[in-house]
Image 1 (cartoon, helix red, strand yellow):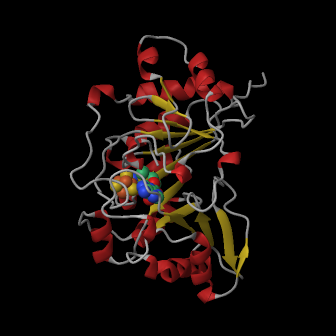
Image 2 (cartoon, rainbow, N blue to C red):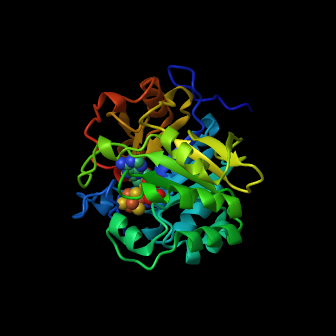
Length: 328
Ligand code: SAM
Ligand code: SF4
């Protein structure tokens, strides 16, 4: 039977769900979370793995194909491998990705791959140990290159490294990150800093426009537009040095919007379906789910209200304190 595709009010079909499985994190990245943490969601309000899987099971017949597990930091929730296996077994789900700070990838990459994880995005804002600790405000022994290598060795593909560029803080590493693509089949993506929530003294002055990033990365050779990774091609625009195995992507929430092709919705850890990263468009799925009600009418209502584009550029950020609350 052909699935009835879920479309929003502007005709964009929705086949991609980002699932936040925890709002907690072992880092306190300066652009994401206050040092003292947030008001964590009580455990009873957080969807169990069975409940998350049930939401996916009800969305899959409507056209859902791809999932991303995120947070907070998803690898700190116990037994993540079990969730990946449960989701991979839902008929219709073709692709599962993970967003992580990478700390646990050396030990988790192989079991996650075995459970059905397809690919991984690793947040890496510096290649220098002291600076990683200063940005994450935690001092773990952590080497993003070793984590990316562990993921590659386990067969996860593609591997993306996400760098939030901040002027005066890590922008002097643009060239070092870009150089990685000459030696590794990795996709290094530079993300423009977004002004949400309680950010430790970060302002618009710390935003480095992506055009400048590409210009600075050109120090290693001419960059030409390239196709991105075969799978999981999201909002990034990709470029490549001649002959390089990896690519350089830029994600430009501040200087360009890519909402017109947005095909994603988000599930928060406490079971709210958000149709836009910003603003307050969301529907509570948890309570109806726990009451045994069908979710399809709620999906349809949420999509009917999905906005055409976010209002970040007008700086109406809709009470969002941190991306960790909605899964980035
Ligand atoms: N903990 C995981 C991680 O760090 O990849 C997943 C959650 S994190 C909220 C998802 C993504 O959001 C990360 O790539 C992070 O760099 C990005 N992010 C968080 N706050 C941001 C901000 N203010 N501006 C730009 N990107 C941000
Ligand atoms: Fe944690 Fe990811 Fe936010 Fe950093 S960006 S504080 S790793 S959730």
